[in-house]
Length: 508
Ligand SMILES: Cc1cc2nc3c(=O)[nH]c(=O)nc-3n(C[C@H](O)[C@H](O)[C@H](O)COP(=O)(O)OP(=O)(O)OC[C@H]3O[C@@H](n4cnc5c(N)ncnc54)[C@H](O)[C@@H]3O)c2cc1C
Image (cartoon, rainbow, N blue to C red; front, side, top):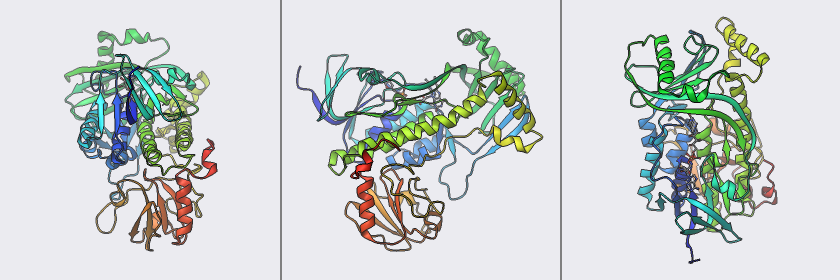
């Protein structure tokens, strides 16, 4: 075989996670090549709810602006029993928050904006029509072979090749967990009628009796309708234009929109999965996004957790490539993100069981809770939809145990993008790449390998005990300190770069 072209990082999959990984690597000055078997960006809307934390990540990697500007922000939701509102979801959103808890935007916009931002970096090449069919790896890197006979070698490979990941198969790896029988029918319609931008869900509505329906509003006058099918429904038959139109028409009529013109843009069938690889690293290959895990859409953790993967992985690959990483750093990617997935699966399982009860007894209880919630507030917490929230790496091998957990933002949590007295934002003050030591009301200790930031007192961040923080390149707090001494900060930095023996442990 000819000597393969060699790059620092090869990314398989130009879905949103692969594109975000490439953009994040470019932020760290790392070149990558992204390979995708498709001819261009997919046009389907799929994941539409982007979380505040994802928007912060996108801001940091150079593409928050267009997605946030195009997306429709929302902070609330309404749950209906039949046609009666029984629960109001209000998510925290105050003047200190730069972004709303969620914005809705079609996935093709997210991908297109990421692609445009990537082109601006000049550090990533996208190769469409490039199907990866083979993989070999050794101590120095991996070589991918392509369907067209070409090949590409890289020091590291990011497997972001989606739920049916070929790289998973090539490495003989299997997802573990549960797949649910229940089917959902997704339809995007173009419709001129105004509608509040919030999450709306109906249990047992007259338009879909015995089942559930979810409605989200997207940009450009598009609504996402998500119909749960019953066991008696023939899923494929329900996708036919006649039956789908009738189902949508019934829901619109229920909303008082019987005569409103609308047009079907996209429809698809969906099945809930709670599946994960037990380890996201295999030699020189790191799995991210749907290739690593599949979670139900309830709570919108699918794509949002994929952005978390990309952001966690990119700085670690950069540190491995520049020689600053310790032996445990790549393993910590798996430890941290597998722990996040297991948490996501636990939360999403509760939501899935609530949306599709797994037994007649559970259904009886669910129906009773929904019916009673309207008049009895005690039942309302039971129907809270548990939306995606940032995961804390409290038990990560990279995190130094916090001296004052419970006060301020503890070690292992993401640094909030707080407004500062001078009108700037905390994340904008962080260095573009690398670690930062924050001194809040005290001089930040100067340590090699981290930027020092002298800030005003920020009690919501530090509590009253820990004015010094070590912040990772992915905005996670790696450690907090009661005093401004350099030696403990340097030790925590070493640990956060995977130099501690304990970082080799996969038990996060
Ligand atoms: C019908 C549907 C509806 C969905 N709805 C929602 C939703 O409402 N909310 C939500 O949060 N999530 C939803 N999701 C999930 C969400 O879209 C995914 O979480 C997200 O796309 C994951 O991004 P990814 O980049 O990991 O993978 P993908 O977007 O799947 O991208 C993987 C890429 O890898 C490429 N690829 C695969 N194999 C190869 C190969 N051998 N060689 C080269 N390239 C390859 C593919 O062409 C693809 O472009 C939905 C998914 C589907 C299918």
